[in-house]
Image (cartoon, rainbow, N blue to C red; front, side):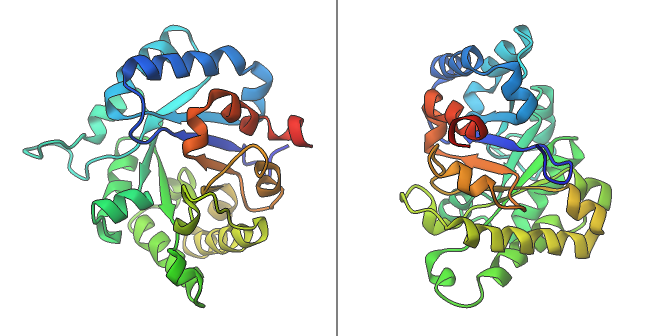
Length: 262
């Protein structure tokens, strides 16, 4: 069942893993195991590295798979002398439906601030793809009393300048930095608290209909065994899965959280 008409979304962020041959193999393994029932229940998305996008596109489109795909990053620039950047126009031409913006690893390792993340969100929207805006607090903030305000500031900056229509098509991923790749996971009730605040903020800025439509994901050491508790929360509509998405059997189990662990 959907929550308020929002279909769950499970996205696998492959990060800097898999050359294009390995990406093809993983996509094929997923396609072999995922069924029409799975796709009817959840939107399943993979986010390969740039070098694998064309290969994944060819397989998905050639075999008419219901698996969806997108990119891990985007340039804020439409074109120009920006060596190493990949523009929204390039990604859209590859058939990408989703693009991450503001992932904690981009913020940390590449110094991306809220203004740059907001520019990337606008570049995604301008090319008619769905932004997956990542927000989340480090452990030092979590231990204080301002973690909600911290995440909401990131949300506000990331959605600055979007119309209500544009905001309704976005996805927000709450990824507490202290729970990414550490084996730690936020308690479902803690994740719900932040996700509910995110929905309330979107509703306040863009209207209650938009707030009700936006899908909010949890990301942070998501595994098959903790997925049911996460998805039991009323404001969590799916997951942004990191390392566990590289194991096709585990990722399929995450996508089937209802059946396996109900």
